[in-house]
Image 1 (tube, protein in one colour):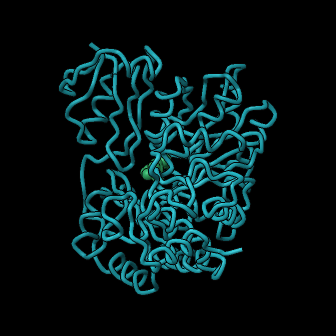
Image 2 (cartoon, rainbow, N blue to C red):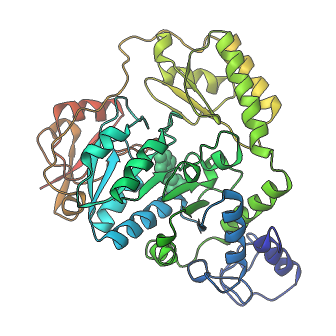
Length: 433
Ligand SMILES: Cc1ncc(COP(=O)(O)O)c(C=O)c1O
């Protein structure tokens, strides 16, 4: 069987000289690989058991990730998260989902779409993936549909998934992992991919850490009971015209990995050495996963935003920076020259200029008045953030990155929440009338 059935088909079609009396309207002139579900191609949400090119390619992906089943998404992890939560609700008939407070906005939109109630676990730190099995277990009730954990977090922190998976198993609750930042974990040493740690399902953005076009992602299924309805669950949220350019890109990664299984470990090895060299030079690093270098600017008396600005002036653009940290994200195509350049800039410039009055964000606990779905569909207005204390939040205010809402629809906006939102540059917020 081909290692790149989608790519093979697209190449053959582009070379065939066929007159394209079908969508899309650019007739292959924008990009010859951009097709739709023509004869011989496949339809993303109907591809199961037909033996077509998408099914073959998804099977290749399942093989390299070692999942029971893998589905492609052309709508990022967002679509995979929507589908994963729909499957949890469909299989349990229940409506509560236990999740860390710093979940991505994709989780909240799923709650709005599906009428799920989030039950929050509060990690100690802003954006942190680190939640404990004990804290999760305390919150499990007979109405728990799933536990939903984000790991890797935006700073590169990781959750110890295995003990949480054991708790979930004991209570018969599926563990769903938002692994948007960790698709690459399947291809390097350490066995840290959520599928190896006991997750029932996980959503991986291929485009964040693998050489895949933006929008390419996977829904991986380990627990067989979720497989039969998975395509249907994806289809209720996804476009009926998924991008073949993204499918092609996902397909090509399977072939690339099969022909060069060290491709990810090689770059992780170079990054391990970079981090060791930076530490030896006294550069303060946050303890991140292997694909990131997270500069702990706050501990050096500076701010992550100032560090990012200096890097920019020196030809390095970071993935994310906030008051505390600056995150550099690498990938399979990062070269030894790129890493050398990063090392030179980080060690030869003052990347931590003194900053005063900087503190790390930490979100205060807020009171809930309504579930996100109820609040989202009630009449609302947009008001000045300075006038929002005491009002009920009605929308998702989540500057991106990291796309993590500090206040959710249905919550009462506190003075502390206003302070934090202003610190993130938010000027207006939607509230209930
Ligand atoms: C933790 C987390 N989950 C989910 C998403 C959504 O991923 P995607 O952009 O692939 O839809 C993101 C995006 O940044 C994210 O950071």
